[in-house]
Image 1 (cartoon, rainbow, N blue to C red):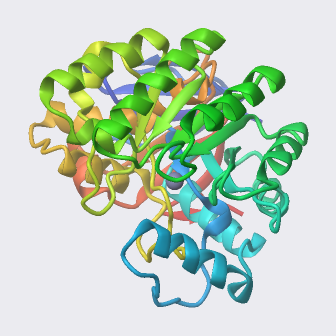
Image 2: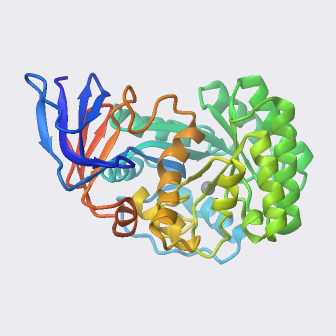
Length: 396
Ligand SMILES: [Zn+2]
């Protein structure tokens, strides 16, 4: 791969315009008026903002109907209705489908996403079909995006006998993170649920990422349980709570107390900011030292018809739902969609820094806040130094 120079753009957080030299897949220099090395390809990105590759920290690739025919939503309004509808209709609609997963990943790449964490449904009837479908789609796009999976018990562990054994097969097959689902509200036995989840994490060296929709004191109590388990297992930095609606609902003092507990234990929080579900207090979490990331959750699936695959648009929803209006606040949401997600995923080298992989997104915006609010089509997307998309279209 020959050298590439992105000429004259504004790297995020850089006080001035600067050129970026990409060599051997990594960022080799960031400085104004860089003389291009002989033979280097030079791409003019002046007046454009340059961001690090976006990080989708919570989605469900295996469920998606993206790229296929429009499917009207038929589930009722309760969580249990959506779960029942999905279980009833997924066979008829051919979920999971490698082509649809590929279509969504293509859309994500074209919109500048470099890293994806996807929660994949695991249950005895599905076996590892979702894991295999996501792996097949990711293999088609190898080198353009990095995809990791969470073994996710969508229909419960204790509530769905046989799931525990399939979760273990998923971990043995190389899935790196064990999921969970409302240990109290869905599985109705948080101690046993967390015993299983954290037991797997210790035996397989896996990370943990638990969907927690339970609200009120029940949700707060489970956040404390998860923090305790994380400390006891020495899993600092490897445990995530997704959604954590209870945190968004709690009073200010409780939010601060729990934020402190999560920070101390090294538990991260992911929000999707979908519908009118509570959004965790992002500023309080960050000031306590909690890692905060964001993701779409479902994208066009049997849980709902929404979602675009664009992480700048998702950051806008996070900012909007957080009542962020000032530029510096909107940038907090962009940080969740970039550096926060990278920290949560444990990506060792990331960002606009010399030596980091050249995962770069060029966008027609004067400021980061404008990029989030307007989320224009991405001009150029690089993954490890390779141009993977131009003008919102995947590079062949
Ligand atoms: Zn989810």
